[in-house]
Image (cartoon, rainbow, N blue to C red; front, top):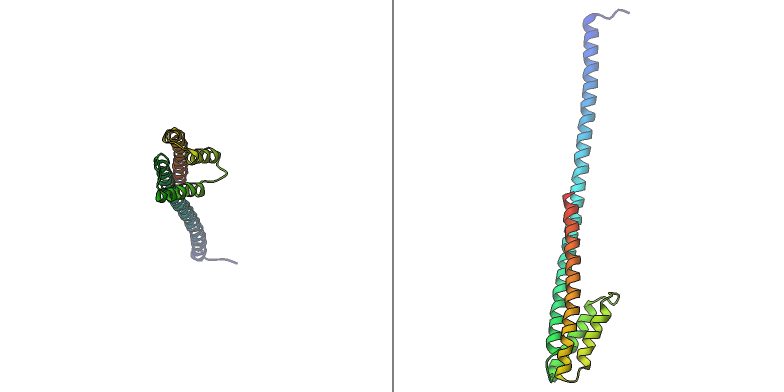
Length: 162
């Protein structure tokens, strides 16, 4: 069988074109797949960051609420001769602190001890002696929780960059 040169040339050009088109399609598929994977990775990273940011927002609100309750308990705790209405606010602040804290927290017992020392104090001098340990314990708790918030947010931001 003798194939004329132009037909053979046309077949070869067609075959090379088909291989080129297939190779081009494969390259296009790879590029599209890689772009899709990168887009999904970016979206996933954004979702994790948004989640961490929302958790940080809730943690900050919790820290603020805890700080306000601690300040209220302290101010009422050192008030000599609390009136009945103030006593209710004192107990409410103490209960709120206990509810905001985790009983499993290693500092919970020290905090509770300081709070109940205010309650047991019978004189103004005893109340004032309770003040420094309470404030110190509260500062330690608030500082630690602030550091946790910053660490979690920094980790989320680092994850966002990667």
